[in-house]
Length: 196
Figure 1 (cartoon, rainbow, N blue to C red):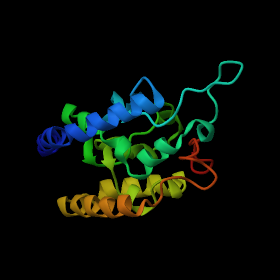
Figure 2 (cartoon, helix red, strand yellow):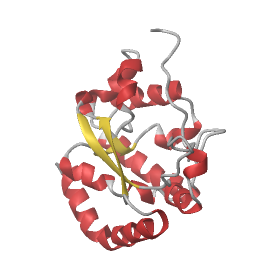
Figure 3 (cartoon, helix red, strand yellow):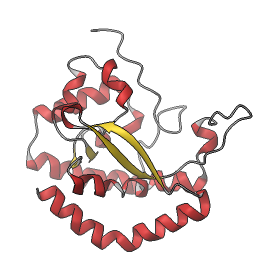
Figure 4 (cartoon, rainbow, N blue to C red):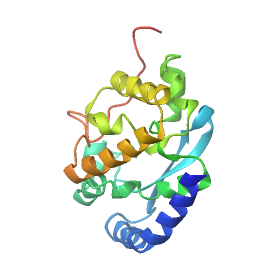
């Protein structure tokens, strides 16, 4: 309940900034302004996830989208490095689909690829930021990320959430862990070969 109240206040206070960003996205990337995608939340409940769009819709001669690295513009990189692209997720928090802190919501396709232990990340609401995000974000591999997610669930406290929020601010200022090595974001999770 506190998350929803805080998100309502944040949406009100940040509405001028979000409007400005929406206009900038429209002028630089066109429509749609928002990137929307279905993601699994708590108990694997599927919801619609929102972000500001950071990539073009450029396609090859066959109509297939070009690789992410070719579609991510300098403006899009700026939005990602500053985490401004994440602001529309305040609406997800207001709706109750997400929390401020928790494991990041990933692709629906990953649900069938998790080990039982990794699937525990869906025991709580996903977050705008999380323990994995302040301990490497996209610069660490999937297995480490999932271990950090489960550790968060087993060790949750209000103090831990406040610590994560503070560390998130530091990470955003330093712009650390935005991408995985040799990728503009994070490579696709294909499943864990061991322990399945």
